[in-house]
Image 1 (tube, rainbow, N blue to C red):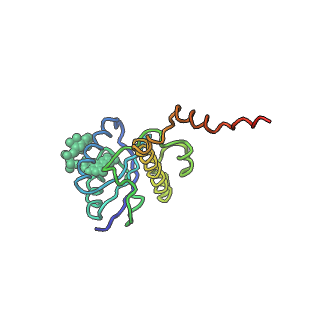
Image 2 (image 1 turned 180 degrees about the horizontal axis):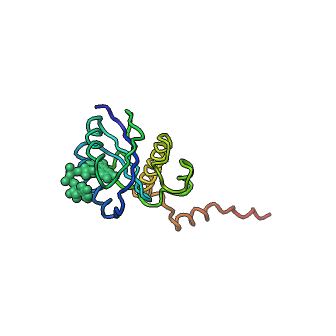
Image 3 (image 1 turned 90 degrees about the horizontal axis):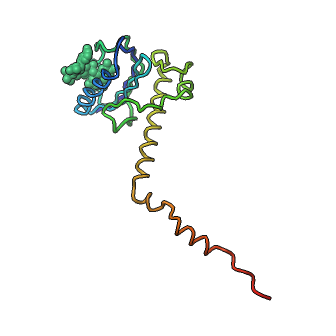
Amino acid sequence: MYLSRLIYASRAADGLQPHDVERILEVSRRNNSKAGVTGVLVHGGREFLQCLEGGREALNTTYARLLPDPRHAEVQLLEYREVSRRWFPDWSMQALPPGLLTRQRLLRYGEREVFAPTRLSADNAAALLEDLAAELRAGAEEREAAASPSARAVEPDPAGLLRRLRSLRPSSPPAS
Ligand code: FAD
């Protein structure tokens, strides 16, 4: 299997509602998990940016199926390439959690502070997705570390800290 990544941008259909996007994600998760496809769907303003990762055949089949979907239009293929690892290995298809498309991040990869992936260069769209993937990974690692028993063991123990501080107090100078 040749692991590949496909990135495209498209315009959302007029009148598309959040529940329509939810429905797209629900069906995508079901289909993608069966096909070994992972990725992220970023929806903001009136546009989509999607990253799909998986075997070549599975990616082509998925892309061919979603291309004519009337819930979006003007689909622009930005990148298709073989890769050595996935950026979103744990996501059969998720929406980006809110708050990650910050003004600074959008300006780093585009000329505007609004999310408009159809106007991004292919390189910048890919760099934005890689950056988002890294942020998601860091968040997941932080949550994992906070939940692990070893992390809890090093949480400060105020009583123990006080005992240690007392033991460090300089002893009074010897009486002359
Ligand atoms: P079904 O199980 O029949 O599911 C299709 C369901 O989608 C229908 O029941 C209906 O509720 C809904 N639906 C289909 N067409 C419309 C429509 N025109 N208007 C409203 N609701 C409709 N599919 C994937 O498998 N993986 C993806 O990663 C993926 N990403 C997508 C990203 C975008 C931006 C869009 C617009 C669509 C995406 N899709 C994706 C959906 C894809 O276009 C197909 O609708 C879906 O793959 C069909 O799945 P199915 O054959 O299992 O059909």
